[in-house]
Amino acid sequence: SRETHTPLAALTLKSTRDIGCLSLLTGRPSPKENAAQLYFQGMLNMPDQNFSLVITNLSEDGMVNFNVLHTPHQVSEVDPGPTYGVNEVNELHKSQSYEIVADQRTNRSMVLKGKTESKIDPITKQSRTVPLTVDESECTKDKAKEGLYFYLSVVPDISSPELVKRFKEGTVWKAVSGFVMKKDAPPTPNLPSLFYSLLQPYSFLPVPRTRASSSGSDTRCAIPTSQPTPPTLSQAHWE
Image 1: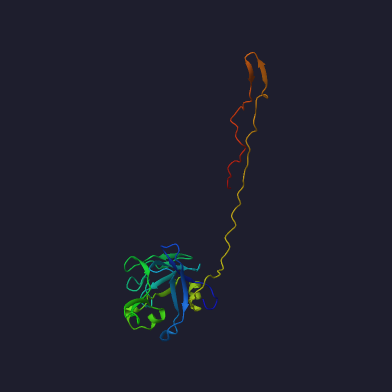
Image 2: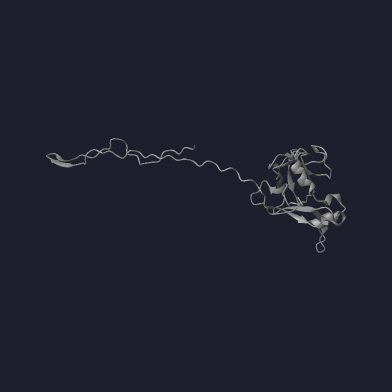
């Protein structure tokens, strides 16, 4: 919210396979032809990695309709479907998250690959493949060189007036590493009552004594009346 700075929704990029792969979402300058729109760039530090998108409803006031679109579209329906949307599940309840692991158009996982182009080496005169920068991709008129773009749409449930009010205050997307949310403290749980009991102490026969005899010596040993068990605590019971 622009007015109260209340976090309403979040989008997270994550790698889904390689443990050592790191992900980052960062802001980018908007192209001159779309200066009024906000642009963000998703990056992974390893090539050709599977990735997923996690969408989250940060509000506790009501449900939101959260769509990640592969084609620009003014969402007015409950489900834009594969014609426009990447995610099939788009209704998020209070404080609920959903991980988009596949594109509903193909039901296959998403892979982030860098764009490349062929250039002639001025020295060897041989063709070689070189990576394409984001700036070059945004300026090109060749559709094959265009990068992958996603468009976000978040609409509040009209039956939640408090949430609708937050959205009417005006909203803006920001790339952040973290944020602060105000939440009501949960009720204090009842503390457990512990009951302890010790086992009875050992009971022994008289102290052993040794006596001499014509056949040698005879040693009588103390034998416990029950198997010796170290004192322990009884189980703890919760009220």
